[in-house]
Image (cartoon, rainbow, N blue to C red; front, top):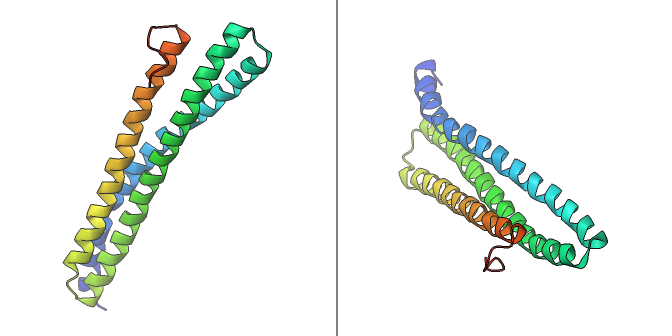
Length: 149
């Protein structure tokens, strides 16, 4: 293998690394959000065990919402991680095919599409969590219709 062949293969394969970096920051944001959901759930569980009847009712309603949100954020993190996995395989595939001199455009395109479909699903889940978090706020301040999500 000559250096003149290796350098362009590396340049082509390194491009998708930017996606990994960006999605990694998104996952960091999502894991922070999940941590806040879990912390809030622990506080509300304590309030439900030791609170007044009205506090218990409100805490139980919020815990139901928080449980749903935690599952949605978990799915968002899983799909974002899947995006990184597909992108990593894409980088390896681009590099190997460039070195082998083969044309695997359909494999590369499929991996690229799979990575971004995973990212789209992750972002949709993240947006769902943000919308559902407003329901918990409604429960906290006793707005009419606050039991709906």
